[in-house]
Length: 177
Image (cartoon, rainbow, N blue to C red):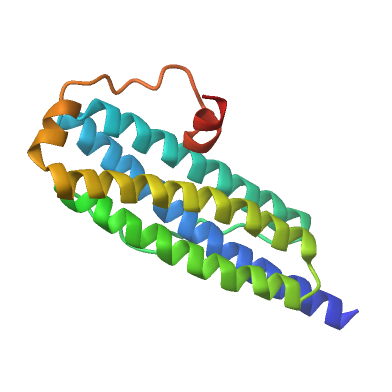
């Protein structure tokens, strides 16, 4: 019985580390959403909000699994929110953040496998796929900004930032298109 409880505790610790990272991502991406909207880059702001919604969904999925395992979901952010970023810096930092998240989640997935929790390992696999989609998007935008600079940004300037009534997020919203 003690071994089982120790294994569950290891998985809950892994899940809470991931939840803390998701909470940080939500706060960071919403801050970026507001800044991009304020700079009048509506299309970029709208997609940032949708990605934050994905992170909210991930955060909730981790919390639900933690509760199923008898744990208490953390409310701590993994890091400090960087405020006032220039549009050109946002996407470079977000690529790095998503890349780090994928790396850490792969390690946390292994913790789950090593502790006999395949269900939670599959949850990590699903979320890793979505984080990869976020990283690809951030990398593409970063590349456009680097290659085309102000020409790309002027094309985006003045576009609408409204995401309407959607709560689907970036991954689900783009899968439907």
